[in-house]
Amino acid sequence: MTDQLSLVFAALADPTRRAILTMLLEDDMAVTDVAAPFDMSLAAISKHLGVLADAGLVTREKRGRVIWCKLDPDALKSASVWMQGFGQFEPVDLDAFERFLDDHLRTDILDDDASAHSPSPNILGG
Amino acid sequence: MTDQLSLVFAALADPTRRAILTMLLEDDMAVTDVAAPFDMSLAAISKHLGVLADAGLVTREKRGRVIWCKLDPDALKSASVWMQGFGQFEPVDLDAFERFLDDHLRTDILDDDASAHSPSPNILGG
DNA sequence: CGAAAAGTTAACCGGATGGTTGAATATGCC
DNA sequence: GGCATATTCAACCATCCGGTTAACTTTTCG
Image (cartoon, helix red, strand yellow):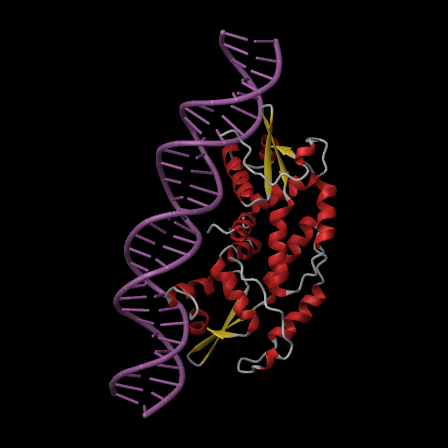
């Protein structure tokens, strides 16, 4: 199941991961803070974030000993585009989408300009 | 993973199933005909159709010894609504959606004039 | 330095998934 | 009746998934 679209839908097929995405819509968050509201181990959340990152829905950036998680628009766009292509029932305005996300993703937590459009996931030292 | 939305996304997370949905967009089809283009057993396709049906994306209706598969709008709508609620980036026009599907799904099983209003071909996921 | 904090990784477990083959159940047809 | 067609069901298998706990790395700080 290597194709990106399948990864995206599979990532969305879990309520915990959808909740994480919703949380990240508010703000970039550290892994520990992402995990806080959930009744499961930090390791489990770390795995969920890995799934989201593999799908391209989230990127992680290490700063000090904290890893900051942020939404990445690209993958969601691909799912959106598929839905559009499928049913033609969603008049997706991709420009509006970009604008919305730029608006939402412009955060003060990571004010590096490198975060502007770095599609590279897995910056984790590995 | 009982919630409907998870079932829908999980169902969409497979290229074979997305291809099936795309095929069904053209026309209602018998299980055997759905299976024809795929290089896998009929039983496997039957299972896929079961997954799609559990997700509410497809309904099956027996007529004689043939089971006709057709798209069902409701589940897709739920996924669409979630995306809308999530990102607010898709101005989903549900009425247009309904109209589109009514148009597409109104084809009586043996009524083949759905080609009148040609929908643009769409991208197979995967 | 040494301990605490932030995350990942590894090993493990039970249950779901995606596929197979073969038998079973309806239904249609001669 | 009897056979072919259409489809599911059942058993089985390998793999993946979501969770756990324990160990490990990296970074911060007294």
